Amino acid sequence: MPILVTGGAGYIGSHTCVELIDNGYEVVVLDNLSNSKPEVLNRIAEVSGQSVRFYQGDVCDKHILNQVFAAHSIDAVVHFAGVKAVGESVEKPIKYYQNNVAGTLTLLEVMREFGVNRIVFSSSATVYGDPREVPIKEDFPVGPVNPYGRSKLMVEDILRDQCTADPSFGACLLRYFNPIGAHASGRMGEDPSGIPNNLMPFVTQVAVGKRSLLQVFGNDYDTPDGTGVRDYIHVVDLALGHVKALMWQQESSGIGVFNLGTGTGVSVLELINAFAVVTGINIPYEIAPRREGDVALCFADANKAKNELHWEARRGLLEMCQDAWRWQKNNPQGY
Image (cartoon, rainbow, N blue to C red; front, side, top):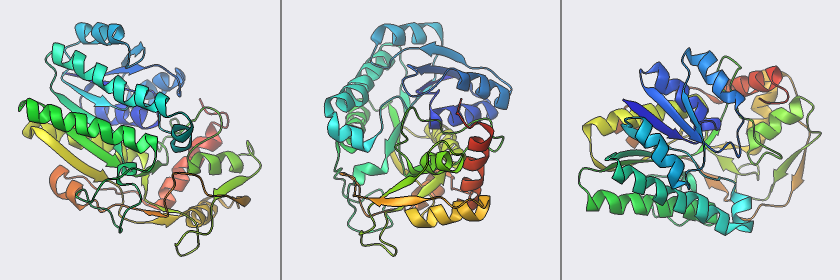
């Protein structure tokens, strides 16, 4: 049965498509290509040996959703489609609520009309806000500190309510931490439009000469070296988590909430140093003011995913850096 992957041409979505295909799923992709390029679809086919059915359109557009669901007997949805830059969300909150919340409501409405009752949702560790302690467990209080995180939590609450209202409905909420890295082939990776919002593509773009300098936002946090500490997870490990979530849903209904992370905190400077170890390239950087909405420490307790989804992150920081560099070096201008 086909799986609809919304936002399937994006960074995490495209890697998830490959892992879904490798596990025997038929994949249908809906993406508006606002932060991705058509070439990624060719790379999915190249890497996996199987093409995906692609529809260019927006998850807020009920007409295109009806077209997709009418053409395919969709079994479940893996929902990535949305906007995801913390800083931009502070500047443009309405855009985030429109895309992330209203878009999901439209998707759920069409799913209901076509009798599709399983969804894996791309949530985020930002729902925890500034955590009271680390590592973060799924039952910790939530309190996002920016519109991006609030939009993710709103969707989580909507899905909880839907699971309560309809006992046959199943939603798996995957709260992931900081995906980096790329497919080991070097043919797929992170290719942000414009100035990167995430650390690793900024590092690799400096390394390849596309940018002259890395900005490190804040060195006065209460962390070992003053820079922010995050849980960096290889994008392929993350993609495999979505496959495990679909498998879990075959045996379970109702709501499931899982952190996807390594359980290890890494500072910005530690990541820069690890990249230098792997590549032999020292990344020039300057300290910039803290970004609004950022927190000092954020890393996961991922034991619940290990015990219930039978998933755990297997790729370490050096492999993440190595794969990210291979992608950037082979594709200096991205796709």
